[in-house]
Image (cartoon, rainbow, N blue to C red; front, side, top):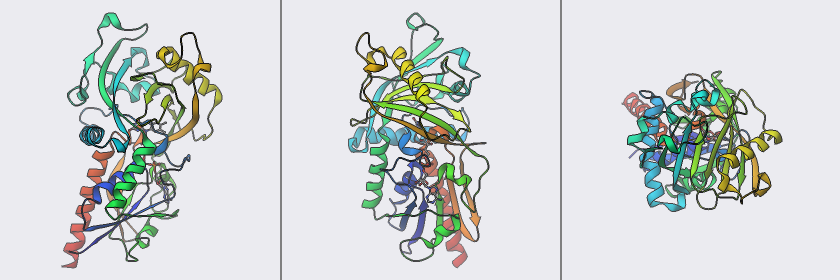
Length: 364
Ligand code: FAD
């Protein structure tokens, strides 16, 4: 059987999930090449900063919705059968304030918070909160059982699964996408490159995608454990400030978020924003701290900032040819890179198969 030489460029959730699916076929000989790898914390590397959870935001009928739909079952399966992957089930409360519908955050969450969303048939235990139990300012709320991913543990788990199947990992910073073709560990030219460089595709030679821009997310990670996950459609502190809380599996701490600051590249945590994040979290989930305590009751592990790789028109999952090199792009997943990861990676794998079939036909 002829080998397929494949280079995956990027080791965030998009690159690693794509490599993981490809590695199930022994004919695929895969090199993952990346500037950053699990274990690194860097502003150019979005994946470790994510909570991450599954809170669907794709509009009904969109590709985004299809990718999220396709991702629930694999995440559920990992949570049920592979505790070492760092994914666990959590009770989840989703709050909607109608007044947020035009804010930057409110628009992102418009599908998530609507009373009759498509995901009610996918994510278990969907229940509307009775009107008489809604807190002040909340117009509707629902509970589900969703998953929360300890992203650093999960990324490392993906690396381990790929390595077990023979994938080779290398560090490199490429200036041009076509250079990846000569980086395969076999020494032979790669048959196809999968571009999973996230926001950096804006600057990568041969791609230079101007549609990409960041949505800055600031978080505070604490040792306190409030129990259920929660997310609100917006806050009173600004159009692009968010309120969400999630406790990661396997002792990963509780992530308090956040913000959704479009076109903001600032890598340093803003201390004032951090204060607002912590105050909002305690106001929404008072059980985070002892009775009567404020933010001094939070035991902080770290402050963090990540840049969600947003793209006008949505993620780019498509074939391309650059300088005669076959490329499959899988980047630009905004704030939903984990919850759409399997759907997007499956789509990318189908495109890889098309490229390989075309190559085989061309040789005959
Ligand atoms: P990245 O993780 O950025 O990885 C890019 C990879 O490409 C890295 O390995 C990098 O080193 C490599 N690379 C880039 N350029 C080069 C180059 N020139 N040469 C070599 N290598 C290169 N999503 C969810 O689904 N649920 C959530 O709850 C959630 N919460 C989030 C919270 C925050 C605060 C943030 C910031 C994001 C959140 N997201 C969430 C979004 C999610 O994190 C991203 O969509 C996802 O991580 C993007 O992954 P990626 O692999 O495409 O990119």
